[in-house]
Image: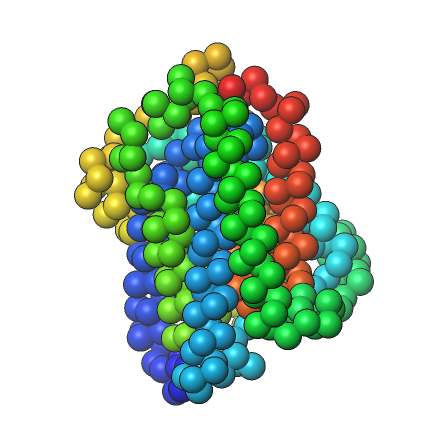
Amino acid sequence: MGPFTSAAGFPVWLDLLIAIIIGIGFGFSLEQAGFSSSRKLAGMFYGYDTTVLKVFFTAAIVALVGSQFLSYFGLLNLNLVFVNEYYVTSAIVGGVIMGLGFIMGGFCPGTGVCAMSIGKIDALFYVLGGLTGAFLFAETYPLIRPFAEDAYRGPVKVNEVLGLSPGVFTLLLIVAAVAMFWVAEIAEKKFARPEITDKI
Amino acid sequence: MKNKYMNPYLAGTLLGLVLLSSMYIAGRGLGASGGLKYCVVSIVGAVSKPHAEKSEYYSKYFEDEQKPLFNWLTMIIFGVLTGGFISGAVSGRLKFKIEKSPNISNVRRLIFAFAGGMLFVYGGQLARGCTSGAALSGMAVLSLAGFVTMMAIFGSAYFFAWFFRKNWI
């Protein structure tokens, strides 16, 4: 029964080898989706290309539904899968800073690294900026620590807050995603910019 | 030129299966900004060990003879570089270039790329995860933090999109 690495106590080298293989799958899927192109990613925010929304929500739903099925059939113990801890202030403020970085830089960290791997020079600068950002965070951490640890709520689950079972919430999320995909297809026609999309 | 990338729903399914495998095998999601952090931690440790050991932020990564470069998250980064390169090679997209709108200069694009990366990873450290670690992986485990971070990232990018439109359209 999964997850395996924590329970089985894998040797370090095997753990790291698994990480590399998962990383290869991650980078391969991002690149195949077209996330190695900043103009394609930015299209999400001007409506001419909504691949980001489609890939992002499809991936989240596949993993969400898949993990619940694995759990249902007793193949995966979901209590041992990491759930992100909720620090209200930093989740919101950090997200807003990330959104600004997204529209300025045209990548998020994963897609930036992916784009760098196929030779995008702008992505190289993005990743160098990212390393600088991590350095600045480390150096300013003592100053912002009270802020970063403010309003801690623990590993809260969204369905519990709404008083729904995981299955019902997942179903609602799928319905919402299909509605968004439908809107996205309309937006791509309405805000079409063939002069950009033909080039990316 | 159309359809040279994979169909987005198919690519999303592939990405979702990679994420599911990570959850099933390792009990954790995907992540990108964390790997960049560990790269910085290793560099700082190599340049100035005393600074790293004295700092309340860096010191925890050097306890018990840990090597921050040989870590799950940095291996993910090496994997992404490899996987992206393989995909680019298979699809004939390996090429050195600066991708930008014809309306802006190369220098402007590179400055904005650098600044954007800096802000994104800073914000990602604050929120304890970026688009992959917090938003995507968080949503896959129904984490409220994941949903909130996702909405904050996309809401903010839509809000600021108007100010930076000249860079893109």
